[in-house]
Length: 393
Length: 103
Image 1 (cartoon, each protein chain N blue to C red):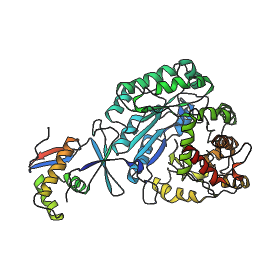
Image 2: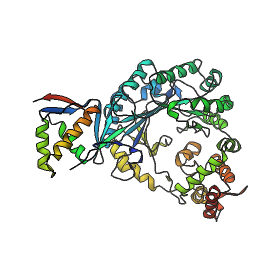
Image 3: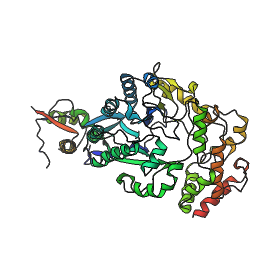
Image 4: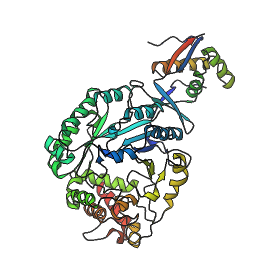
């Protein structure tokens, strides 16, 4: 018995939580509400803030505490509070403090509009231990509010963010590339670089927007689809720094060899997500009712240890998927997954043409496919991946 | 300045942290601001530290904790006392324990 460094800083990010049957998942996503105080043009989850019907169906404070307690008992280290806008819940401070007192760290996704001085003080006194993530929709009032659809939202977002800055509460920003703000990318990147916790890293901006996983509004989905960037536009953005893009993708192929099989959940599933009404989903995006687990009737432990692991064995049966995705060496870089297939087509295994085009546009740039070539028909894929790596070296 | 640790002192886990056991490993999660050097740090302890941490909430004075440890571990003369004082000093500095009383 001998030791002089007794207390050790512990980084659990590389710890294999959830990777074996005996360990808990590292993170649980909690969608506190589907309501939002913004009405963003591209968003797939923003019921009106004052929607009484939606609010009445949401889990109550004690029900959420029960789920948080179960998460703590399972050894889950982090919960992500998201929505909608999670701060719309009047009991947010109570739930936040409850989670933190269980020793759970909190990742908060917010638009920052209702970060009041009181909320900011609480976050300063009892820090979430994860950088808050703030969605930013424009650098100017006009562009921001053209996205959110709410007059006054820009000023509120700036005030909320300033409250965090004043108290040195760590946060990062992320964007959404949309027609009203598409000319502000440079300004956004430069501004983001001034935020201490961004550490000079350019902010991520979404541009391949997801459709409504509830599959309940064709009109909304049509609107969202029209706001997605085209494959050509995507490539201009992705390859702004072509050499670093090639290097990153070569490293990506090194780390993630293509899963050439008919398994549906090549992602491994998760983090699991509790929706606002107590249904546990395999992930935040996959809302197919028969794949969810009702936490009002069962336990988080049963869902995570007995029910969800079996999803990993699910196989595709769609002929098109089997002919294409199951044999495609771009599968790891393609966003195709059961959740995307579900929101687009109402099945788990229908190829999503838009995502396929995006993946092929990237592959064409990287020299992995030729113009007009379909990646699932490529026979010398290993050689092509090797060539990509050689070109980087 | 390091507090001088006496053998009649009794310590308790601080309300500024939450201790969790994950996969058999002690994880100390800061609750209030300012615990640790960085606010996003989690902490663990080596075997010695974990054994002492677990005994610190027993409401026993340091001399009894050291006596218990000496029954459980084989170590050179004074080594267990040195370790116990070392960890208590570090935990106090990091606000992970507080002095509860003296017997």
